[in-house]
Length: 239
Image 1 (spheres, rainbow, N blue to C red):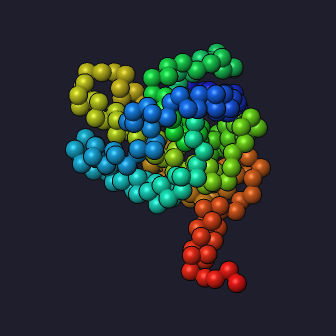
Image 2: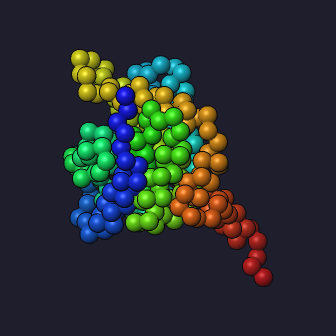
Image 3: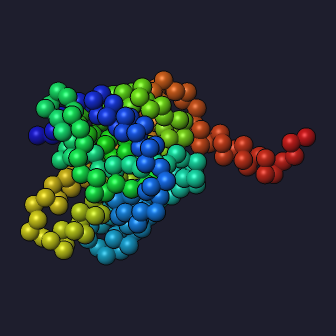
């Protein structure tokens, strides 16, 4: 049975965490790259080359890494950054089923895109949900009320959620090869794989529109419009 986290409570918690993370800026920018940091998702291509995963799952992960390279990496320099917790999963969230009391285990914390904490939290809360997009919208609405999201963050969120699932599956597969008797390592692999396959069946544009609607933002694709303007200014006179 999935752990039923209160969606609005999670959104509120992650929003407050993002606001407080500003006080850590300047202290965490020189941390070593984390294998759990979405900024470094492309490094996990090496894991795929080691054949830890089935060919079917590997092909899905390669697809989403490619989508990440196309839809996230070109805009990385414009995404806000902060010190993030980076591991809001069911083992690290303190809750009684009705309220969330806090967050523990900062072992994977890193200086990364602020939106990543939301993407990570969503990747876990959406596992084994019959309507993951609706649940995601509840979390996003609560988060946005505390820490407003911008259009670019919303445009990349679909791909970051998929990226976290890919990252989790790569890391757990590699760790299981090294520690085959561990029960903890692969505990989220099956629901993560199921959600990744479901995510592939969704239209990313429609999901992004739903996310923006939940936050009360315009449905304009900020990435496309911005890229068109840059391309136009590069090749045409402003006269």
